[in-house]
Image (cartoon, rainbow, N blue to C red; front, side):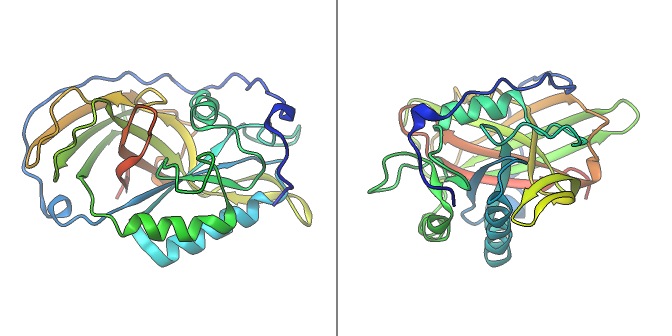
Length: 279
């Protein structure tokens, strides 16, 4: 990992304009049956990795996340956010993985001192001074968060129409325990894996490096959509969302990721979940 350096020395980089189609979001409320995947859902932990194609040590961080996924399976939900000093593409890169939401999330969750870095469940752990954590800390804090019972559970039902290039998503929130915090939010991300492009590695630039869990866009604002309903135990809430699909993304390699989190000074994630858009 790079030596940690003062935050005021980090240079803010303007992101290049993206070709992504802005999502159109609609919301609806109602009741649906939870289904066995919802009622039996275990605690799932979100890890948000901040990375960049110019970061020589980031491939080691990404490999560490894959190792953790191999250990925890679906209980670990990962997203790789290309933002910050090391994110601008090379002149011979095919793609620019930066997004407006990624830059906003970097500011929202806090600039890291160095890379590789990640935020686990957006939680400020005892003894830490910010949300960003070094690679050596990820495994322990993930394991700690997995010991907690989920206060809410999530069901994601995506529907992709190839002819109209539209993605619809129905999200069901099952409240397991009363959530009394006044500001609770639902965030929905689209990620893509299996994208080969340039990456700096300890052996030099690698043109066919396989990038995984790339944040492509969000179906909500970067800081989530406020859940206005009272979150009392036993209640079920459904919300529907819709967006235009970007044909540059391979829908067969894309996931839809949803999580419920606090929106105040504490940003703790209460539960995360993800599914393939195309099963």
